[in-house]
Image (cartoon, rainbow, N blue to C red; front, top):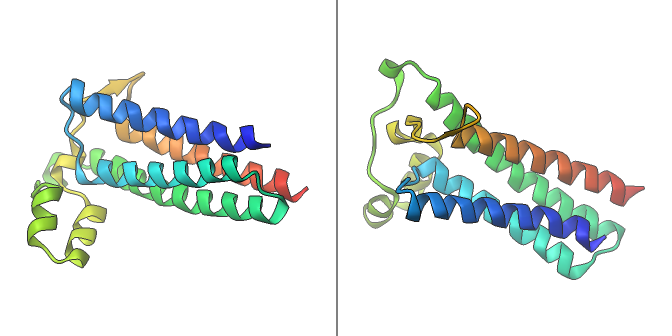
Length: 159
């Protein structure tokens, strides 16, 4: 059973690693929504890794699955917002805002969180595609898969 919890943790680690590769070796600077999605991938990774190490019984497994599904839903919503921004007509795309580090240094925390979740014009830029999908679209698909996997695993734990 531990392997079933470890597999999505490893998948999240691989996705995060590729994101850092794109950032540091392919010069793809992450936008605020990308950074938020990384945070959700990290949370899902931590939950599934903790479950893999812990090897929970039925109730504990359901708790881990619920937490992973909630975090994956947060990532799904964030990725959906970015995909929506990417498909807006150019005249409706919001203007680019300051980067995350500037916001943290100069804005109160509630304003930073609001700005992160709303995205900016930078979040609408598509500079990378694979099989016709942008990074945000792939992230949307991955978060959907993580939600479905967590629900499947919870159902398996329940039976």
